Length: 505
Image (cartoon, rainbow, N blue to C red):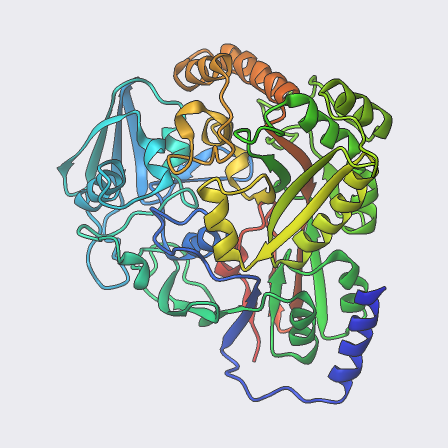
């Protein structure tokens, strides 16, 4: 009700104001928060990865079916299970004019492996024994053991090749080889990028993009309606979409998404270390009601981190559908009876000021109260929230996996004992020796059937232990002005449609 009134107020305000003069060649892209770090070796938040994907290239890329395709490497060979040979494209230049060589590849990987830059991505390359520049166009990776995910971790979006010598302050003025080049960044205000006219791939038709940081969803709606903002992706609450759809100068494009909303727990916490408590919380969440009410049906319930179309996806796992009675029984068995005030537990959920997250947290607070769990909500701007999450200063939090969950190495990154943050994204310190063994086997096995069996068992274990609850796959919804054409939403919610879209003046 409050949002409906606010949206009505936005409409009245728009009707009585005119758009301020603006550069017709600049696309204004509204985002909820500043990227945490535009060094592609470091940034792991959604805004950093989405913008980095426009500025940088990996050695390989992947298509819609998750098959690998050439990028900075025009081809590659694997003469044996422990050796990869990448043949670089000729004539590729960084945005500052330097020619890309194999030495840049060596520097990029080694700067992460040796700690020259501090990054959670370092553990991703633990299988690498050494990297050599055989000549200017040939980079050779020597592995300690076979690694089925090396190509994944060398792909555009997962990382990007940086110039030799790039240090820890590289994020201040990142230089890549991508279709766009960095212009400027003002923390909590904007990031500006422009077309790279010497792009080795197709040169974008959009001259300049300004990513304007607008944390408040109502303000975003106002910016779009009055024409001072051109596009947003997945940052408006779904109940704002009907009003947006009524605007003749706006358009909405959507596609089923792969990005997944999840709820994570700190297993070092005495209350949450008991799997029965986590299972009870799962049973208390009415996902279908949330999807219908908050997301207007633009999501599908999830039982695994992987997309349902993935070869390793397993739907034969333990489920915790909405069942408050079962939730109460689990809490009773875990030794948490209701007190005189009806309360069993007091927990705290940390969150950012993002509107979707705040709405989700408010609904979770109500649903958990029904089974006797009092959920306190603590919000902060995204950088502070994300810093707390990465250092394990939380009981519960919710975020989305965006793109990273499209390959099965997400299980290692998020749940392996070797990937405790900051070495990975195991922020809740979950540890299961059997899971670690299965993940290690799947990473090196050349038998595809065995790998599929390993991942099937991994998903079964995670569904029982519930170190995190997979909530839903969110559709990618793009709201944009009519002057932006050729928008093709990505299932992962990436911004790569900017590489081919056009802007009319």
